[in-house]
Image: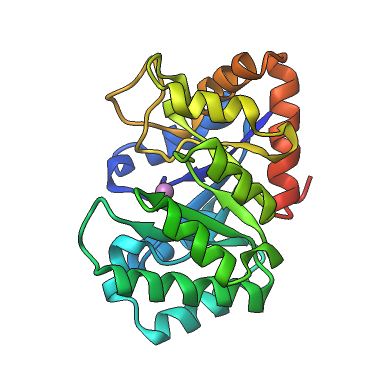
Length: 256
Ligand code: NI
């Protein structure tokens, strides 16, 4: 059994066959899925999914790419949603310096507000970091994110950065890229992350693992990520599934 700790099954890429995709995940042994909503539309869709499927849980937050659109009432809405029994984390939040859709200062402000909210509500945080490693670590430190901890989603930083995140009570999550032959850096970081802080995810429909790279990703493929992780860690797949499932249950306080 395993848990896909980061998926966007609400995405339009699944509009034709969403239920089949979700059933395939179950058949592949995925016992729970955390679906991540990151703006008004996707949060609503995510909450609907948690309503339709008892094994789908929600993370709700505001993506840095959409930071420019976040209003104060959105933050209040997220705070309300955190009382919902299926909402298990705030995020994804963070910084994205690749897509230049929101100014850096706006991204930073929206990020800080959400870390503060997470501390207020005592919820773990899901971090999106694209080409912003140093600023992410600095802001997490300044905002005392260690009080709630969380997960570095689809981690792309160095081992040095991973250590800083581990020290702030964060888990390190890996996705499709660790299955790529030429992905030296994430593999090397994964090898060094302590097993008790490791998570696996898909980020469906994005970041599809080998051998489906280039096609649409789906939660069933988290098995390929777990296989790659077991191989890199040189442990049995069963052991990897047990450990990462246990880690996800602990971080997100999921029912066992
Ligand atoms: Ni995501």
